[in-house]
Image (tube, rainbow, N blue to C red):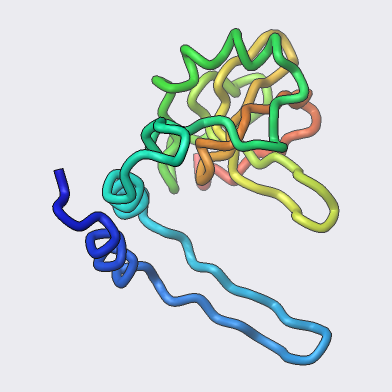
Length: 157
């Protein structure tokens, strides 16, 4: 157990990559670099339990972001915690929509303003995919038709 959790979190926070702010006035763009998963997990662990008593590292439900499909959430929660992305950056990516299976990485469209994001396939039922965002695993899972996801270029065959 940490003696002084705020100091530990602060020390770990100093290891975070520096972001940038571009522009000024009415138009400001923020650049937030990726955070290594190991560092993120250490920060959550050092932060300790949340106000409701639950551990920060296990908090999966964010108020106001509940899954729109409670049935899909209940069916996939147990399996989703154990599914890891099997698609490394340069190999192992599916070459066609028919090849997509559990653990593969695809691109899912969030909105016109937010664009496309990497998602990991948690479950596949015919042409319906249950996904979670690769870099935000604590966000709720979501469902997309296979025709609405994009494939990442797997490179030369």
